[in-house]
Image (cartoon, rainbow, N blue to C red; front, side, top):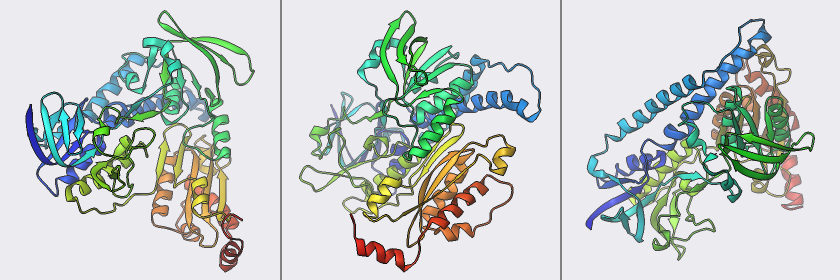
Length: 488
């Protein structure tokens, strides 16, 4: 078996791994990138980009059908599924090609193909022919879709989002399990492209929302267009020929229905790809899911003896936030600290930001109301402001006047703390709010910003005005909280 020594070994060549490689290379030229699967990053191959290509086609069909509402008459709208998928693959391959092209800048000797596993804390076995000694190691192995055993009854009719982007033609019907980000995005897109879709959930969750008011509003809105049941009562799943038979209780009538679908799409969550790394040989402290404990500001893992390890972890592998911008940030921090080890530096972790490209769009900014209340103590320090888009001027002009936003601020200081958004083109307003939160802006400062007319951002101003009206500011609220104390 060939033996080799390096300063830094990075396991995984996705978004986090590539970011880690570039950061580590600023400290050493002895950095290798190990990948045991397909190259091209999850985002480009089977994630962000192909899903947005499918959504773009679906939105085009939807807007064409909806043109009559503006007095614009069109003929029958036909969706050419084969053409839709052909464009998706062509553009997807272009995105993957850009990633592969950028990887050519990495010397071939520093790109190692093969599955890596720990033999000892500083030793990796790659494939069956290489023993690699590394001063530091970065785990950036990503994640994969997981599903309950019940779905196995669907056989090869059980698919994940990766499989959707390999279709040559659109199917007639798909049952989507999991009304999270992936399930809602793909489910609505397929519905708008003419595929018969039902979306089933289990625990009542819907997208990233934690606020019951946002969940209920989004639930009602989506169900006006397609079937979503966040708390579905599915009785049986069976395979029959080339279809899946699902028996469930219809949420609106309570009737037992049995329906056939071409596929069962599992969008029920992802599990980190750490179970085949031999982490039992790495000397790391692991949580109940087998994921290393780590410091989120340095990305450094913890040893079994509670000391800091020479191993770092980044991206989907750590289960924190499965988003590309988070993976890139975490990879940069992990790679920088792996390269400079044993010195470590706390990296900048940006404001949590999540956007779901449904229509209306969903977005969350900050840590969520429950976490904020816990962080700020038992005294009620959170003010809430809200606004709907039901009668908002620009939204009515666009015939997209559906939506609700809730914003949070701290009593006393007036600092903006975050929010949850559901409405038209929320990807843009979400960024404005994330930037404001990053800058620790106050609500009054945000209201002093310019607002053009007529724009959707005027809906944001309405929510900020409501938030400002509900804020209790000045020493009185601070004294009251001190008098009662946390937990009162």
